[in-house]
Amino acid sequence: MTTLQETVKAIGTRARLASKAIMRATDQQKSAALSTIADLLDRSHDVLTLANEKDLAQAKSHDLSGALLDRLTLSPKSLLLMSQSLRQIAAMPDPIGSLGVTTVRPNGMRVAQMRVPLGVIGIIYESRPNVTIDAAALCIKSGNACVLRGGSEAFHSNMALVAVISQALKAVGLPESVVQYIETTDRDAVGYLVTMTEEIDVIVPRGGKGLIKRLQEQARVPMIKHLDGNCHVYVDKAANLETAKQIAINAKTYRYGICGAMETLLVHQAVAADFVPMICEALSSLGVEIRGCAKTRALFPDAKEASAQDWAEEYLAPILAMRVVDDQTAAMDHIAKWGSGHTDAIVTQDIAAADAFERDVDSSSVYVNLPTCFADGFEYGLGAEIGISTNRLHARGPVGLEGLTTLKWVLRGEGQTRG
Image (cartoon, rainbow, N blue to C red; front, side):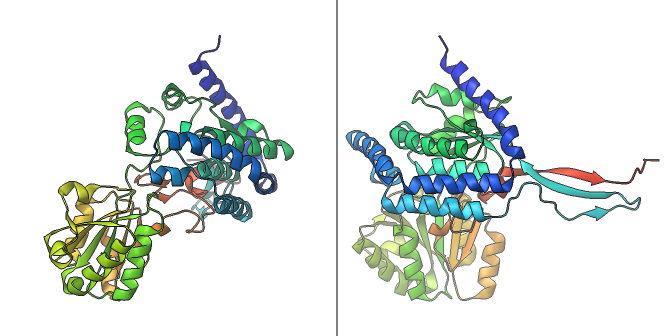
């Protein structure tokens, strides 16, 4: 009888073989696969919704949080966005085989770097069935094979989506094993996958702290990851306060469960008397609980007292930490101490302040006069993202097509020899 470890190993072996085929596929073939997936998705709403309803019913019986239920739901809008994303990625230039700047050496040989696929990518994720489509699409377009392992709470949804992907790959003449799904909810499967250094080149985890910490301890395969999305908006003394209000509301309430949701609002003391009551009343009316520093609570008495833990917290819920700071340096120091390096924003009309914030805040994405909820590969024009990375090596921020490639050196000559 085949063990689970042998099953996962066999999936990895098939993925390694399939990676050779997808690496050699033409852009026309890869784009055709994505367009076909999009067409099949558009025709499969009823089937996908039925599968998703099974997962939602099970999730509700297990008392999953509102944020997780939101991530799990395949709404008509989300299905439409999946199709749009697939077509956008299909239309994007193929990164594979592109050359960087060519340098001609004194002996006449030409030196350049070429983009090539990473190989086989393992994607481990929780209650986000849209990741199944995003991950498959980006891997196909960038010439990579992938092994998917979604959370048990989205099992039926993911299986239905993978069936659509397999059908499309087969229709355009690509191996179905370019995209494979580990069809078990057994947690041990993840432990096997992240140690398969011969079969898997990179692991991309998308999930909560518990998942990421577990993988950090177990993985032998390199990972592209972020641990927290503790995002900040800083309202500068030179901010347009009405603009700041709209940005803060959108950053917090667009969707509570996304990693780009604002979790802490920092306000310059020069505008705090006007801005703090205004934004607290607006957010409170939308059901957001405010946890503030002493200065915040003096201006808005309904705010609860913020603890040190609140400055570090990724709530993923209608809760906001708020702090009045002395100046921009204090705001940036707060972000440096408590932030997660994900996405942070400044609202200001002072160009010098904006420039300093962009330069000195060490996060994977830094915004000026924009809400942090734009932290999304689709919004960046990447078509989609396979995840958001706070790594310093290889890829940082939303990881799109280019983030799933690496570089090799290619040299051309006319028979030169080294003396």
